[in-house]
Image (cartoon, rainbow, N blue to C red; front, side, top):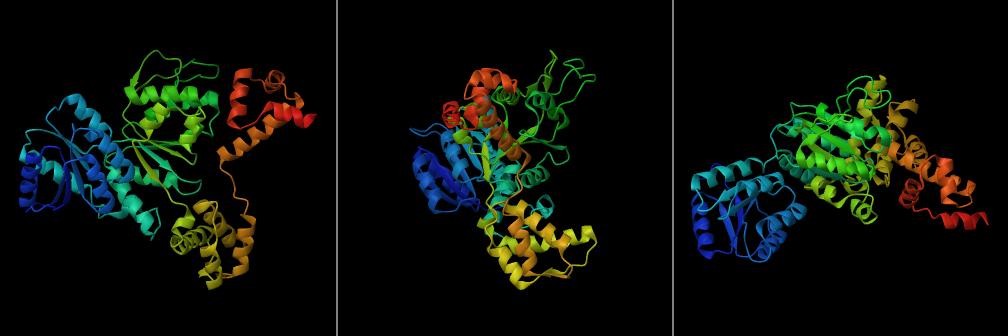
Length: 447
């Protein structure tokens, strides 16, 4: 009997190997389902639950890595073992970098297979210690499923893209991934790519040499080096300028960086997590985000649900936030009234958890009673209908208004508007495209 029995799906176009593997694994105590085509495996995964997928690498039609890519998108966190009679070190390295758990060459050594399966199964169960996720408050089945996937993925040294609306807790999940990973003892470093001026972002990421530019009086270690042996969070990655996307892609491909003003390349050892509330597929279509960088960052995608999708979490979150806020302000507040809690639970929360935090903070700051009444929540909610924007959102709004005003001043003449803005004509055209502004429309409004 195996140390941990598993339900295993095997796909291989060799029927004799399927029979042999099935017999061996069933003798070990595993439950095995065997199919001879990747498409059949995908259909099985849609209808049934498995702990592990084993796939041949070379098969007619869809190969093992293409199957893995499809499984990664639709069944995040399911461990995959690739088998091949044509194995090579290069293929194994590529496969493991992309997130494949194990790469086994044929003829299959049974002891090696047993160890690889056991290793995969060790990732299939969320750690008994909840410390890695202690900051994430939830009782939602949707969130629990996401956290189970998160723990599995955290064990693998792959790049992760976190998506979801603003305020859903992407940075919190990134910190949890770091704590659950083998890099937990290393640093966690984060940067908001939309909050740093474009001319400083490269230096912040890659560092700079002394004298690299005016004001560079000291050598500066960039965030990649500060995060060495740890995790780097690139928040709002969708706001990174395209020319820097090229340099980021090169750094990730080569695992080396070159500080601004230096001729030396430096090796890096960093796990990159990216986050965005933007639709990067649309950004790629608009030419604002590089497709090759997208696939480099999006080895695994974890999508955070909106607060309205996990409404059962609102009461537990509200009580937790109330307790911590009251303790911080040293105020004796015990709870929300029943009707106040009902209003919290049934609200839309366009600003998600961030908006809930603001509402609870306002209630705690203004209440004179140990029980927060309905009217306090109504007041806080009405004032938070305007959801406080992130720095990136505020900057984008200002930039759009500024461009509209400059174009009006220039009567729709892009060259003159560029002179007013202190930018070249090409840069201004890119900004106009980003904000979907048309100079001719502005000129028509003036006329």
